[in-house]
Amino acid sequence: MLRRTFITSSAAVAVAAVAPLPAAAAPKRIGATDVTRLESGLGRLTEIDDRQGGHGALERAALSGAAAALALTRENASARTRARLFAIASDYTCWAAWSSIDARRLDQAETYLDRALSLAGLGSDTTAALRVWNFRSMVAYQRSDGATALAAAHAAQAATITRRDPLFASLAHARTAVAHSHAGDRQAALRSVGRAEDALGRARKVHRPSWADFYGRAELVALTAIVQDNVGMGAEAEASSHRALAQIPARFRRNRALATARLALAQLHQGEAELACSSAADVFTVMDGDPLPARMRTLLGDFHRDLLTAAPGSAAANDWTDNLRANWSRP
Image (cartoon, rainbow, N blue to C red; front, top):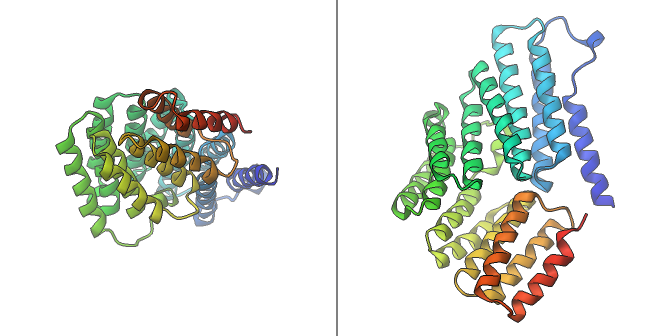
């Protein structure tokens, strides 16, 4: 009960942080204070997502923030401030899209991404555009649309920001690697992983949008594990998953749970059903009783299906099935 209260109150704080000012209190000219207030709301959404993942309260807070930013574009503001407001609206809309992706509401996510890309264009924000293409590739991957996943990843690579910031170049190469691995192109996938590693090695600590906090060495290793498992490198995928879990900060709880599920799949694909079931059960421990985002449920569903194919009727499979039933519908 206390945990659910915390999450609900956190979302309420985020909504309050991005809510538009009452008309009577609105400044005659929009300036840096208004922009800073809206940007701080983006940071709060990042904190909520790190803990729980995508959910309705996060989506509503994101849409509220986008509306607040767009409302201010209609006030008296410099061209530079107005462009920044459009970019902020794009970032908020991307958060709504991300919440839909995590909840596996892919049609809604694509609608939000169309809007976010348009707003990024109005704000001349190439970083926001990269984020949209990264999400586009993720959506296509979840739809098993390999051609679109790869095309979107290439569009992310082409974003201007990748030529100025190696970290974003690394993210785009990593997404390309996942798309290649889904198509079974082992050589191209591993080549893209190498490019992602090289780019990340050149990245420096500079100010970036709060949404980019998730990406670094640990996330790249976690994505590498996905690539390796997809192209049949089970032992390497297991090792990469272990390395990722050793590096992912505790505050990225949802990401740790996903990496744990990926570890279980890599172990299962090597024939280690009992060990894999133990790892899969750890997902529930990591999430600590909070609802599982639909994307995580899908991953566990994939594990369950593969387990029943690889070890039907085994003691490990039976125990896992009981565990899954006990935790699946937890509120």
